[in-house]
Image (tube, rainbow, N blue to C red; front, side, top):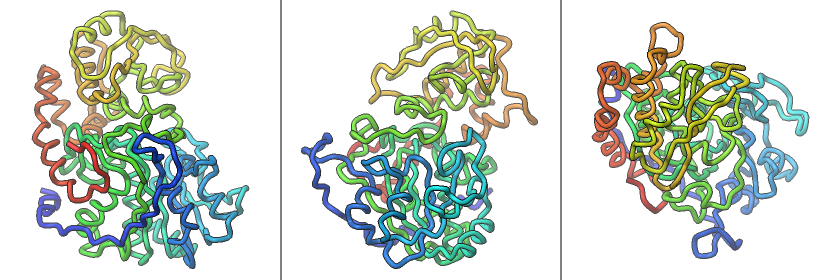
Length: 427
């Protein structure tokens, strides 16, 4: 068994005090107060938490302020923050790379700041980069989408490990979880960790990155480092956001966190529809509706017809035909469905995807896992164990598969409670 069995005895996080700058501008949906990202809160406070420090920033195009300027550009122009390095995650700092890609090391032409490639970087490599650039405070500001396999939270995790080694402060500029605070789906099991899930958390975790940082620092990092936690963890909280709010409720502008995450609706379905990456069906990459259009050359009207009779919360299914221009089935006409969101507050994307996969396997002998060795390994990594795959191949119903992880979801919801920073529904 992996060391995760030791988690029950892990201590509670002792974090640095949170900055609490009152939200003063009108608008939004809570008592006339607008939702403010952690970045905006810190900017309004004159970047005081970073004063006198050599700062390294981990960010991408989502790290913006209300005027749409990036925090790095604004920090640099203000003269109040000494940004000595930027670290780019998957897709890069400025967002020019596709899935699985990065921008490499380069000097940012706008600011003259050195940008280092942090996508897939080992902890030792990050330690080297922190040391080389003289970073004393690491700032993390990236919009997450709430799924275990969205890689930015694991970039943050590795960055936190490196900060422990170098003694750097770690500051998270928090942003809302766009799919809200509900936890859903299976727990990752020992033996199934990877770059899309470095530690054992649930598939749709229902936490902000700031909340995850608190959990990581209290429970996971001490086990990975042999005891030490961060010298200082500071979370600059979102103001006026409640965890039952979806992104469209916040009034904040949506900046694509990655090239195939164009809208908040994409984020709503992504925790489930990403499972189609593990199949020979297109998950809609290379279309205007990635993760909402799902299909393959062998799919016909029968799939949509079968799904329309299901009572799946928050979604309906429209028969659709599309031709992806990249990725699987590129330049080939695919039949399939468009996942139509009918009630955003009720969407259970993992449940919906489970029904879709079960029905596709029933209807089409051509349905299979994507080509890899061993077959089906990717679905195991995405779902966190081999249970989804083995139950599916044993002809379990979608209801049986979903029921199999309920106790894990309940346990996760209870376990994460002490790390939550925002009020509202969180079951």
